[in-house]
Image 1 (cartoon, rainbow, N blue to C red):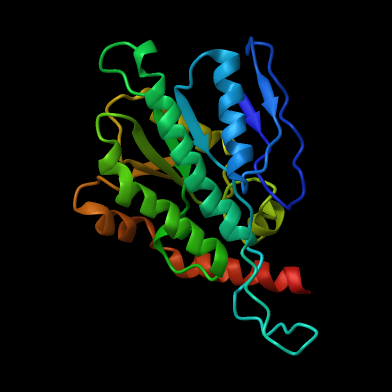
Image 2 (image 1 turned 90 degrees about the vertical axis):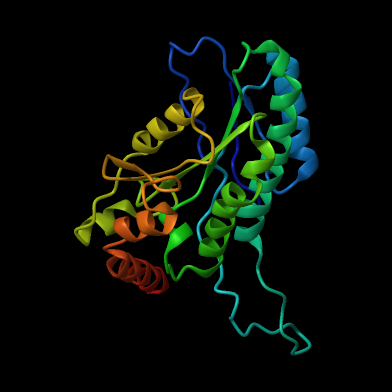
Length: 253
């Protein structure tokens, strides 16, 4: 088991507390925006444990730009867009998935016949609705695109699934502010249960599990298809958009 720092060019989070029942754990500090850093971490984990069976690509930060700010350089020319969130939330995840697929397949001989290792990526409800946090929403649509775009390439080799949580208590959001608006904020353990299920259920490949306030729904393979399922859970999408706007206003004030 390993734990990596999840972000690049961003405030470093506190490490988790290792519970006594976890017999062996290692922590690796890495830069998810660096291919070499991620690659070296996979190499190190394989050396420590001899195999890699499951990978959770959970690197993520909040929005950092709207891409349309008219920021000029010292010569009066428009500056390039800030791609920090894109680099962490999407490009870093793509690198993780590529590495994970390689190392999980490399270690396939160590598993029981028919047993596949798995990758879980973190999507969001922002993956399938209007959500005016521009760069963040772009990345979460992209993460969902990994499920839709490359899942077929991994069929029978590695299971690829996603979690799509709604408002969850992490350092990325002001949970107290959101709860003050009358909106429920779930604990991270709710999302962790989805991840544990996707790691362990050998029948799950191409699944996207939505969660909010302790309730779960698989939306990618649901009856009626993805669009029908997404439409069914986004009855409060306008309200969610208003929350995003209020969060942005509070940050600017």
